[in-house]
Image (tube, rainbow, N blue to C red; front, side, top):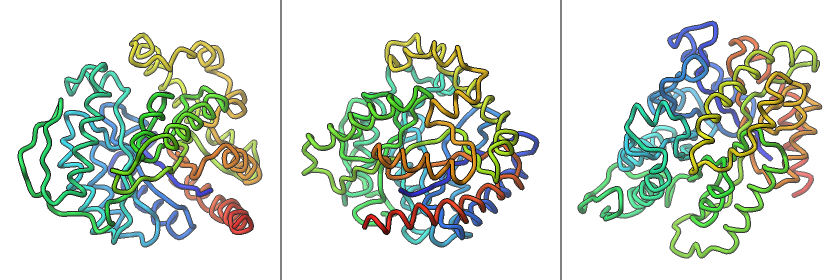
Length: 357
């Protein structure tokens, strides 16, 4: 079990100028504390909770201030506004400047505002992601890239630069539906689960579907198959007492949850997102933080002991890495939480892992 960090430039109480420089300082601290991975998602048109629209630029600055922590885009949206050749070029550049610490998680967007602004029909996102992934893998591995697919038609070209990590940096996909987990397993790439607040049983269903698909698929033509399983925790905060943790994180936890509900309620009417059928339970509990903390893996708020207990449970379910979104609670609070996790949670998890080995 590894503990990573996912932040999205929450602008609550600050500006993009201040928050971006705070983020760089926070990642630098996380690097010294033993966090495994840092990343941010590509988000558009969704302030104040999300402000990072050009993550590749920010990653370059972070790479120069850190030494050990992996830098993973979480996630790069593989739709028509992001040409997969450009995604491959940016990833290779990050891999070079970070001395081999780059990774990539991809996604198809579920934000109707973003899809509308960039002119993408929700029914086309899966096909665009599939074809873009084919191009991405070729761009990273093939001496000469050539592709004739349903979305992209590319004549023979030499893509430069190539990554220093061979055959390519680790690849995963952000997945919410069971079907997306199956697709990831069949492709032989890792998966980062966001279980949409639908609970531990739903998370296990997704993980089991992924593991079954990975085990039953032929990956002989995949350059570097990996069965990495990560979990995105939408709101995390660790404090000395549970009362303090809940007090500090309450507003950001409930605000993020309601943002997701506002996003998913209209999306659930689209037949391409049938995994959102269980929204009624979430709507009924939209004001109950205690219920969220108990019911869903997407919220982790409490003491170091609470974190360790939750991490043990997730490890038993098959999770390799938990990615904590610690954001929106103020720079000083974020640093306090990082230091507490680094001092009292990460060493315990590492010792448990060593004991098993």
